[in-house]
Amino acid sequence: MLTAISSRTVAYDAETFESFLATRQEPAWVTDQRRQAFEVYRELLATELDPEEWKRVDTRAFRPEKFAIGTASQSAASFGTLLADRAEFGGIVSHVDGVCSVSKLDPDLASQGVLFGNLSDLLRDHGEILRPHLLTRGVKSDTDRFSAWHAAFWTGGTVLYVPRNVEIAKPLYSLIGLAAEGAADFSHTLVILEEGAQATLLEETSSASATASGMHIGAVELLQGSRSNLQYVQLQNWNNKVWHFAHQAGRVEADASLRWSVAGLGARLAHIHQDVYLDGKGATAQVNGVTFATDKQLISYYTQQTHNAPNTQSDLLYKDVVRDHARCVWRGMIKVAKDAQKTDGYQRNDSLLLSETCRVDAIPGLEIEADDVRCTHGATCGRVDEEQLFYCMCRGLTRSEAMHIIVEGFFQRVYDRIPVEIVRETLGQAVERKLGIGGE
Image 1: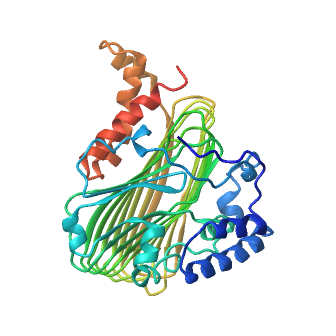
Image 2: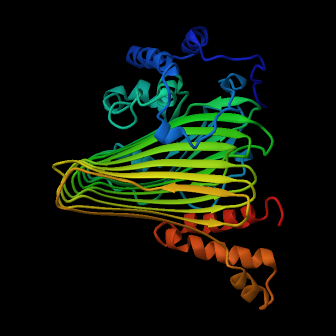
Image 3: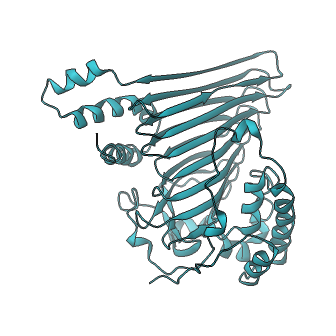
């Protein structure tokens, strides 16, 4: 059973904020950090959002007062997750409407000093480890009103901390779920890998039903020490009545490697601000993205690859499939600092249009201050070739089956860059289900 969320109009004003704080049992430094963020939030409400990032994202229908932070007791087992039952995990954490419902970690990992669990609990028990990292190095609360809003009202989330030279062989799994009608979730994901550590985290956002509206104002921080290796996969699988806004940042130190894969499948409107900072010499990052928008969805990514040190490498590849009256927006930027010589930066976005009424906006960009670099970018957009469909259908396939083969082939290059087999298989099945939405 769910604890009902009040249907009254909720404004995220000072009264709401004080009422929210009264429900929290947190260290004083967390409350102070929230209060500072709330003051920034109130100031930024009167400040125009960056037009370069937001001018293609129509939020006129967004009514945040319709969504309230509540409590939930529904088991995560009721969710139609994509990944939860498909692999053996070293640990599982799940949140429903901002409340932790499951938290498990292999005892052997815990004995090595690994922390994996609910953010609120671990801040109380291990604040000395987490305090220097929470909303200080990755996502900044003063970036815009959404990052400040999140920093003031975060409701929980997942923490992964891996000590120096500890390698986790099994993947870890995190679920962020929305269940109640009108629920608001402000979950935060914080990943910290110390020097030489290694881990894989699979994270999924999901709705308990296809009909419940919701709002997610999230943040992800991936913080890596030197020589660490992180694989982070996020599957965004909200229903088509969820508003999804998120700030995500990865910071990669010397000789560390980040492989970051995302899939944007759900949400009524989703806008993700994704930053990768290569802060140490020899740092590398590979960012892979798959987006499939149907009906009237709008899915938008604003990505930045920032090279702050020499001999760093970044490689970003996004593939978008759009159908019906849906729209995808991708704005990418490679930034190279003056001292970041020998940088190798690449970004590419390819889009496949399955209808005459859908739309894609792809805008790559470069800001280079160093003079000894190799940075390239590109974007392509095109329709499905009817001859390809005809060729497949002549061999006994239905039009739907033929379209599935073509879309799978289009996504294959991204699938090949994802080293976790269950993720590749899961994405293929999700795409097949998505092709069945809305008819032909």
